Length: 443
Image (cartoon, rainbow, N blue to C red; front, side, top):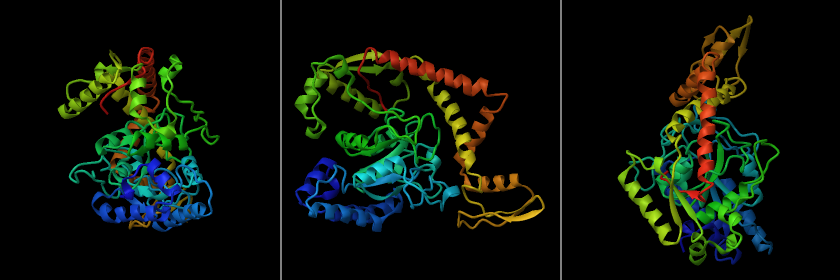
């Protein structure tokens, strides 16, 4: 039995039946990290001692004859823009190279309560700004299936860790594809939950109106189990909501019974369900430029669903052509505002010796990077020196672009207009979902 290849359900059964211990499971995953991660570079920080300690606590509960939660003992990885108390959280940036999280994110509190074992923090594009995990300030992550290729981004470290059997599941964050893209590149399952269904408290903000934390796992069922564990309203995040998700066709057609999660999605139930399903295919998503191999795989999948009884219907999302431009304007604007807090004084590195108001002030340092001390004339120089050294090229580009967009002369022309177009794009989806249950597209 290869412990690192088991699903969450199989591991839970194995732990309950004492086929193996949580400590053995944890050591198996740590062994995989030692074996593979020198070449893949999925992890920024491996928490070996604390992981083994957490695993032993689960074994103690089992030995005492106590019931354990479903995620108890599951070795997982966390994207390094999600706070884990007393552990470094860099967001893949030099500006936070030695920043230690003062508290747990809400999703981490929930995982800890359920007994999940945190193996380490995973690499990402700086502040989640990227699609390849090449923009990390520390090192790039490689695709486990082909080390010459990228794993996608920005949650590339989390995706690579799961794909390489270095974690049974991982958490990522998704603003404009940062879970879905690396999940696709690495052949795993990734879910960007509906905005608000998972608390963002303890997630370093990139674009607040788009950011979501989500699960990444080996199977759809595993992904659902993790989502169930982390979802729900949180008083620390005013945008969070109670999630009462279910397949839309169940709401519409009360005769369909979806099986309980604990039984899994068995084929006979899927066949019965798909006879009532309508799958929408947006014509704007199958256009010139799509990779031929990707198109072939997606069309074969569509054909399989049709053979299982689903109805396939072409739909139109007419404002798709404006989506990318709209996205770039919104994320740059929100990133500019969110990253303003990293000023080299309260947050971020600062190796600057400053003189202003006639007083010599030595700034506190959060980074051990070998930047030279400089004498500067004013507080603004402190900001410029610290942010100029600490932020990478992509972060600086986003900040400059967003600051320009939000300036008095351009706010209405760009940001306000982008928000109006965003509403039109949303309306396209609302209209499509009046006719279909799901949309199926390439990532």
